[in-house]
Amino acid sequence: MSRKMPIIHSKAVIAETRQFRIEALQLEFSSGQQRRYERLARGGSHGAVLVVPMLDHQTVLLVREYAAGLHRYELGLPKGKIDPGEDNLSAANRELKEEVGYGARRLRHLHTVSMAPAYLEHTIDIILAEQLYPEKLAGDEPEELEVVPWSIHEIDRLMRCGECSEARSIAALYLTAAHLRDRLIDQPRP
Amino acid sequence: MSRKMPIIHSKAVIAETRQFRIEALQLEFSSGQQRRYERLARGGSHGAVLVVPMLDHQTVLLVREYAAGLHRYELGLPKGKIDPGEDNLSAANRELKEEVGYGARRLRHLHTVSMAPAYLEHTIDIILAEQLYPEKLAGDEPEELEVVPWSIHEIDRLMRCGECSEARSIAALYLTAAHLRDRLIDQPRP
Image (cartoon, rainbow over all chains, first blue to last red; front, side):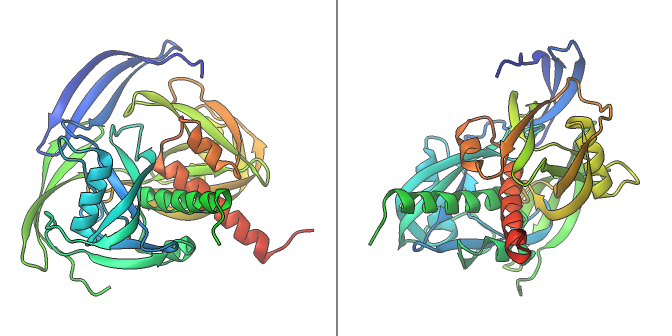
């Protein structure tokens, strides 16, 4: 890709709260056009993980969790922030134990996705978790999450149910389905 | 779903910039636990659209666009805000003309997705655009966007290319592929 990156002439924090930091960027594009953009910075975050817990070859464990942004319950994949000093696989395993009550013997990074790259610096690592075993850790959730088993082959039914809107979870489920299909083709099992 | 919604005891705007408005919510969960949550409100926004422009039965038109949140170029689907008084299909057609240089004779709402429902109020409507014809409208982009045709059957290659991280675009491409497959099954063509 040969397009020249815009030059950041200045960057300033214009608002900061406990959870968010908003930056204003003064940009010059290679076309010569100048623009002021605002974006939400990650701040001191160490990143985040979205876990795809596969109970068996077709059952994924979803959680029903309150989402304050939309003020409704969302059916989606367990997720959480990476703690300082933790790697993304350990964070995924910890979140899985806290939110779903399982640990995983096999963890694999599938893809890193962004949510709204035009104005959010945040990204999230999608981690496939397999070979699960029961283990519960106490988390910081304000209430127990309801765990909902779902067939990975029925993403269309999940879309129609009206409770799953999160693009990250939808992308992660399709990516997992594609990954499992490819693996089956590469290494056929009896 | 029988779980009782948390009660919002108070809601206050704690920071506001040209583009963002941050709210603090004081919440009480049905478990009795109280929490303070922050979220990014949509403000005066009328919503947004993500367009999946199909040039033919398999070619989707992607755009390479600067993303200030990540300070890099992203390969993804064209998108933009809905203007006041506009419906989502008209907004999709306008954005398509501005960013890609095509209009669509057939527009269809596939799904509405959220990006980070735990702390973002924003959602985006995924609009499938078909039966395209050349038409260019001047937009407000700071530079011309590069249009990149891609096969809808090669989402895995798009994932590997390293330029597409946006969960909304990934979800929209998989949802479109599933929709086109279902349509083909429902109404077989010679």
